[in-house]
Image (cartoon, rainbow, N blue to C red; front, side, top):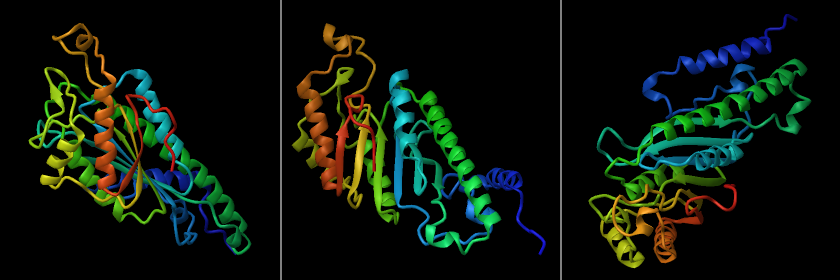
Length: 290
């Protein structure tokens, strides 16, 4: 019988062509990582992934090189077989910036052990090879996209609708069928919108968490993440003030201000049916995980 399966090099080529042919109108909103099961004509499993990470980057935050590398490292740690990733950027609906999904990708699970014996040997081998390339392709996509977003981020943007972005993102997170969901947010956590502002005199304002939560409730800013775990990197990160005290000009953040900011977001996510695992001030102490 003639072998109708494509050599793995051609499978990879077709996969890349499929990605390049993706209509721009749908880029980011569908799976941007070509399927190896489709390429090798093998029926996929019932659940292509169990884990999902939603990575959201605040365009108003400019990180230093160490924190930028931490963002990439933490994101890549979650790009594993059987996982889905979403990369989005946000700030405020102004200055040409808004919540925008850049890429969505699924790194497929390997063939289940119970199906190995019933799958042609050549097809199974091609699938294994393709999945290896798929994982590399996805990791490169994630690293490159994150670097591009962080490069064009700017602390000079005036508004930042952090709560609205979180509420909007929660809908997509809640609707996803993944068993384990993680939301990785790169933001200073400094709301600056028509609802409220966490700034004062070119520095971080010492907020009253209860008062700010009441404002959020009045504006219907709580979402529903359906139990997702949340990590925030970049808390209170902003350029040093150009005036004020020496401490403000040095970019100092007093412990009470940081604690109140962290408490606000911990309570905000709790009211949005999520668990804030860590609020990095600005770096994370523990790695992001599912």
